[in-house]
Structures are given as structure tokens and as C-alpha cells.
Image 1 (cartoon, rainbow, N blue to C red):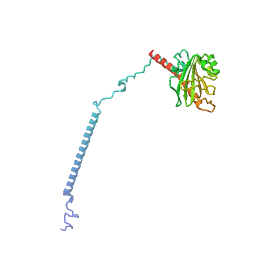
Image 2 (image 1 turned 90 degrees about the vertical axis):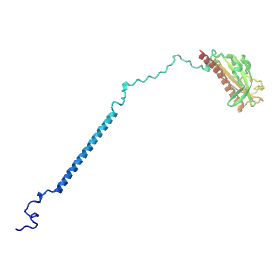
Image 3 (image 1 turned 180 degrees about the vertical axis):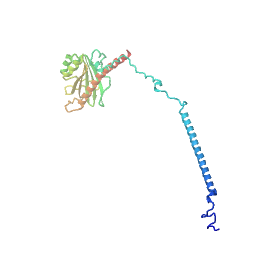
Image 4 (image 1 turned 180 degrees about the horizontal axis):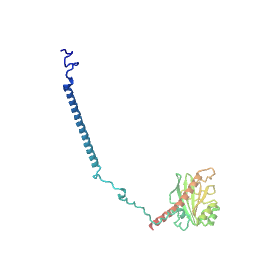
Length: 281
């Protein structure tokens, strides 16, 4: 009996098949693979369970923070009403306007304060534009024409001059006399200004010798309320005033400004007194 090459159990023999014997290595490998899959499933399930628990806890925390323990804000209609701010109140009493000083140098019924050289020329000097003229002397008279020259006396009489007050000031060899005349009305004072003719008589006295006698001097006339005011200015040494000189011209202008200020102050003093009386009442 001959056998094929390789024996009865060789690859080319006709004996029993090699597959009838279990392949223990393959079986072991399969078993290990199944164990790995099982472990993976268990780990995956644990992770999912952990994530689920974490989600539940997070939800619980969020719910707790937003739950009924948080104080609720009131709705707008439940808010308390803001108290109304107090409104200012005003008295029904009308406060009269302050008295106008011009009224007190215009209306004879209001212009009742005494008119004297002390009240009208109280300063010891005339000051204007930084220039100072010491006061030399003063005078007052109810006979206005007696202290006027030329045609001025007649004009003063015509329009009912009540009183004329004068004051003389001097500076640097120049003297100026300021005259203030009071009338019954504003119209009368304005008429004297418009009809004015030289002039007021210069007033000498104190340290001022007679001036503006028989020589040319600067003169002026104006009106404020029921008062007319005049100036006459010239050199103490008798030098005639010419059209080109400036010292006498400046003294005349300063005297006129001073006279106007004193008339207005006379009105302000009376207006202030009237205002104080109103406050007391």
C-alpha cells in the first residue's frame, strides 16, 4: 500500500479534514474581543449616566437660583406714587416800582426838600475827570436877577426864577462860578435855557479875587428838570479868554458837569427818602 507524499494527514491526503480539530488560539482571541466590547459598553454607559446626573444637578441649581426664594420686583402700577413737588406761591400784593429821581427834580409837588448851599454844594471841592478844584465860596438868593448880568436877569424874572444858588471853585489860575436856578416847572427852565443871554455874575470870595469883570470869559447854560444851571469861567489874573485857549473851557465844562450831578443828586436823595417811607408802610 502506497501513500501519497506527505502521509495520510498531509495536505493532499484523503484522511480526516484538519478543520475538525478546534482552533484554540482563534477561540481565545474571539473571547478577548467580546470582553473588550463589554467593558467599553459598561464604561460608555457610566459616562452617560454621569453626564445625566450632572445635567440634573445643574438644572436643580439653576431652578433653585431662579425659584421663589428670589424677591420679585413690583409691577409699575404697584410702585408708590412720587410726591408732587411744592409749587411756588406768590403774593398778590403788587410792589410799587422805586421812585424815579427825575420826578423829584421835575414835579414841584414832589420836590419839597430844602434847597440850600449846604445841600447843593456840600463838597469842599469840585472833582471832574481827575481834576480837582477847591471850593472858595458860596451864596444863595431869591432875587435871581440881582446876580445876573446883561439880558439874563430879565429872562430869569420873566420865567419866575424862585431861587439862585452859586459856588466858586478855582484851579491853576482859573476860577469857575456854578449857578443853579429853580423854577416852577420844567417848561420854564427849558425856556430860560433856550432864551439864554450872558450871563451869570462871577462870585468872588475866600481865596478867589474878583474875576470875569470887564473881560471875556467862558459861559454856558443848560437845564435839568425844573432847574437851569449856568457857568462862567476865566483867568484870575484878568487875562481875556480867547477861542483857542483850553483851561477856562475845561473849567467851564467841569463846572457844568458838576452842576448837573448835584441837581440829579438832589432828586436821588428825595427818591431814596420816599422809597424808605414806602417800605415802612
